[in-house]
Amino acid sequence: MRTRPETLLPYQAPQFLARAEELAGYLRSLDVSEVAHVMKLSPDKAASTVELMARWSSGESGSRPAIDAFIGDIYSGLQVHTWTPADRHEANGRLLILSGLYGGLRACDSVVPYRLEMGYRLPTMPEKNLYQYWGDTLATLLSPSAKSLVNLSAVEYTKALLPYINTPVVTPRFLTVSPKNGEPIFVVVHAKIARGAFAKWLVVNRIDNTEQLTLFDDLGYRYDASLSTPEQPVYVCQEFGGIGLSVRLS
Image (cartoon, rainbow, N blue to C red; front, side):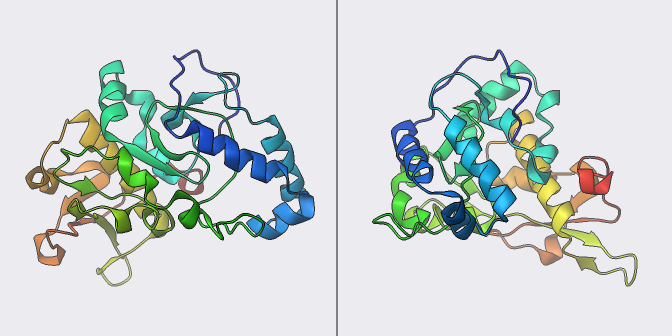
């Protein structure tokens, strides 16, 4: 997560901040060896995580909007530095970021750097893992009037939400044509960046129904009807257009 420089953007409190404070308190109760065990970290990484969580607070100091805070391929695909204030406002009402510590975040909810992935187990808490801790709570963040949900999260995170909703779910899949045999294959880095780019496209173009999803054409992707179903539209690129968005593809 980004730690510097701090932003001057308005503070917006996450909706489950009290529960985030509870989880942060639990993490502070663990010593370095326990953090290393829970998070499967090296001693050095565990020690830096203990220091990180010791600095964590639920206030404004050191915070920034969620869409500006996270670093990773999917967030590189979002390209939020290109968004207008109107785009950010649109995202704040339509984009839900799932989080181990905060549960669920609106795009502009203010967050402080932390480390707590959704898949971690909680050996000394009543709940054995974060899925049990959050239960059906995250589903309350979805608009009751939503006609569908476009799922761009990793399985580790969707397991915390999808079992508790009845809203139709659309899960796009992104493939890249292999230069070896000309067949479309799944490339992890490409797909992560594409998921972010797809979220950006939904926001910037104000996409408001599933029929429009076939129009996505960023990063060289095109909708492939022969490989798609209504629940899983498939997009294929002949040559990936996101080189440079990831540090691994620079």
